Length: 524
Image 1 (cartoon, helix red, strand yellow):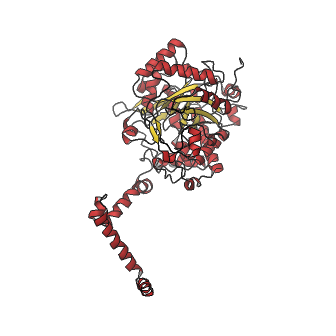
Image 2 (cartoon, helix red, strand yellow):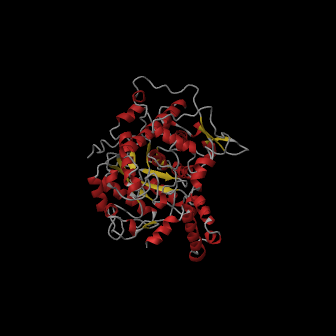
Image 3 (cartoon, helix red, strand yellow):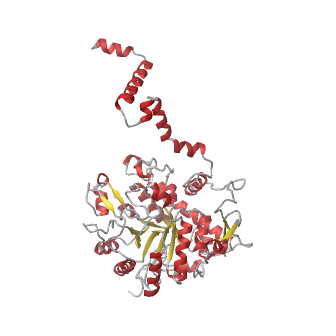
């Protein structure tokens, strides 16, 4: 034995390296058949797979220029990171954008900008920009809600995002006066950190689910009664990442905590069907909206990615006929992306936000219904200039998902679907989650929201307005094509939005429904 040990110790380091390479070669040639390249080119073939695995990172940091990456380029990510950290987010030496490129937008400034009067609420708080409409006001819901912030956290579930990420976001919206959409994974303890919440459910009915997977009104009533932070309810019809497709949460991922939150069994696969069981047609959807609103007193809305318009037309016709309907509609764009999806869905199913929203808005505009609906836009709108375009088109609030993730540390690694998110944001790995400093990251999300509102308000003032709701379709121009390079939104999309009733910011500040602080109607 000692002689063997002496022989092994006598082998130099390069000898061990040769032995390992020989063993790898034998394994590649004779034992593995799954990888042709490493079989035909042993040892060297592994280099190809390694380079391929780090290709996205190499391109992101060393190859791509500042403006060419998707879904968010380096300039966009840098603006979010700097805004969240309260660092310098300015640019020097002029823009490096191609301002003649297709779809580039221009916000028209007024010769003399809006001057904030002395004593004005925005002279005191430069980040105060609430929604100009009240959810549930038209339909006389018992608990109307005016979102205190025009930018809020979009639907992202606990399960797809980590516990630490959800907790940081909820604490962040509490600090910034925004709301937090739960996503369809149910209301977790991490959503109960002081922020306003919109409870969102989809085809799985998680959190309000019967044992056989149907919707439970009793559970919905109890959930709302026990959680006053819930200010509104949203029914998901579809989402931008994978409209018309359900999902499967593997049983191996169903911990006791997730099972309790979602109302499912530990260790069993959970199916989210492609369609709802609680309704089968538009009339039944409308009835469900009214039933939930009556039982809970809360505003109820729907969320969808836009494709065909026939059923939306049917919904609008019923709303016009009955005087009932959703209190808000969230329009998701096909560019949405926090939900894992097959490339065929992510790349091709549903319209991009600008095409989808403009098509849908015209459906309700034609019937004079737009004034009773709060329109929420969702789809890469978390930048002031894009938000100005969205408000000019008819939006009343925007929801952000990936932008919110980046504000708390997401680096756009694009591995959300693998459970290996290096930033700890989109993973259930406990070790990776420990990288999220919750108090710090909540401050950064809050700071991103406040910086966004401040800059958006400055753009609004430059356009001569007091509130973004005053934007019209003629206030924004975009490049269309080489023959007719630049048009107003009204010309490009063929409509003018309905004028939003607005007196002044002070009226919004004094509103008893602002932020849901006084949510009970005086009639009760």
